Image 1 (tube, helix red, strand yellow):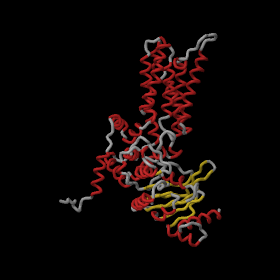
Image 2 (cartoon, rainbow over the protein chains, first blue to last red):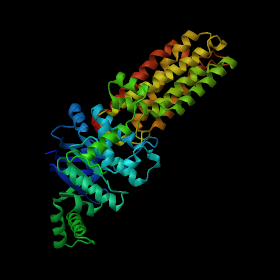
Image 3 (cartoon, helix red, strand yellow):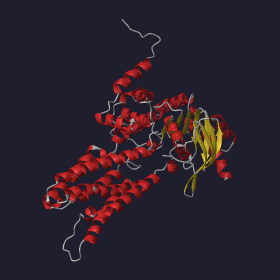
Length: 250
Length: 244
């Protein structure tokens, strides 16, 4: 298992963002769904080793991130795209991706080719030397995806990756996720249910800091057909049915 | 005649290799030196992206100190010694942090630690400001105000250390560079004015603004403040806070 969470809780003052979550995830693409404030981003930030849990046991890639040496090794093998990714406007696309390849401590002799491969994967070859301040929002998002995948990570974390991408780019990105999911663990937090249906092998649905559903997209769809969910698509009906059940239970 | 590649050639790989050569960035001499010195290409690159080491910032600092040196030479007011710690404190506060680095959150998930980047940048900004301050001080040697030039030239480095450490500690603790800079500058102004007033003999018509720099009795408290602030920075950036 690349991710092992055991009773993980994260509190901010009196507010509990993540509430005793237990989760084991191996290779594949896990879609993390849930309404705003459900705790998805906090959970993702803990997986990215940016945020420490208030309590519980967290193991990533078989290592304990509380140990500095382990944490460093995890980070070398990690790719992360935060929800709000800041950019250095004066950097070019290549410079930005290279910067993060170096911060991830990739061997310097591998960096140049890895950066070129990442740029090609997100289809930004024609903009490789362009300054980031000249790019559109969708292109900047793709730059963010490129820096996340530049080190061929074993654990890949995306927070709202398709925000700002046009439909064609979203299709390409889903294919990229599926490709990485063959060998790595990909966790993608999103509001877009159709992304989950198209790219994820598993779904976890969060509500009020807890995971209230874990299964395949087909199982989520089935819950919608059986329950009282609302929505235009079967997955949306499953999503809303489970959330409604979780809310009435709490 | 049409040329077709052999079947066993991976054209994507060939193209990626070509693109890598075309897009390759050649690090400058400064970055290569920093890489050798720091033994980390990532840390060297992070150092060279320090906002308070960018050329416009350095030019502004140089102009500020040059004006101070000119005023000191012409009017006899010891401005360089008073300006240098405040300017350095602002630079150190703006070296690194959530509001300063656009990609700060992402940097925190990288193998090169937040703490190391912060330390490297703060030390570099301090060193650059110390060199500029020394140059400005050296330019005023021989003026009336620099009668004790040898003492003053080096003495202000001690209060500068304390003020910079305070600015950094406040910036890190509050996660706000502006708050850190304001705290450093405000503390320095209070110390300069307060100590000048306290050290003036009763009935004196003027005050000596250099008292906060020339009084050897203050050196130990300055060093104590610097040590305390360094401890605060160490505590505030401890990995348990956010695994950074």
